[in-house]
Length: 208
Image 1 (cartoon, rainbow, N blue to C red):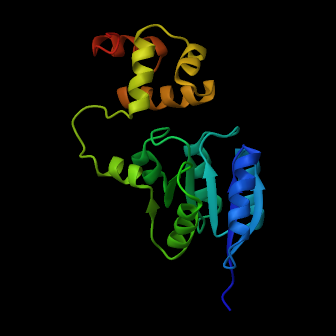
Image 2: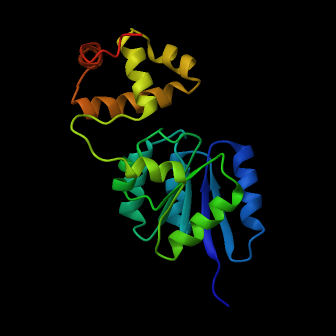
């Protein structure tokens, strides 16, 4: 009999961990070897337990997701990373793919999607939700390419909103707003918030 696929689950919401964990425990070919509620614990458990697959929530305390993925690739090069997210534009799918993730599952999908993703990446493939696949299929155009959420942040930025105000209006955490801003700064090559505001205003994000 083949050895079961070992899985580590990293998500800061206990109810989500419980739900996904129960789904995994029902499968004879999968073995849940640990759970983490933040990025630091995730990194430590991956290094000590060496799972085959990591189910990684993007919005957790600890290192930013792209930084965490880079650390994992350095210390656990054989690890298959499947992203879990409640949003299809939290971090661009292109950026995550470039960072080395093997799958991307939206949390509003049925549990079978997680199971398919795990088995697919272990077999050497990749598994992305249809929404994410469409995002990856968009043609590359000249100029910065923003996700729909980044467009919303740019609009609020151009209209003088603080990070806390953006978080409230978008119903996300302030930490999530900072991630969006970080990605925006990188795309428009801005070094300061004021530079980003000027760019957003000049490109008509302050209207409407």
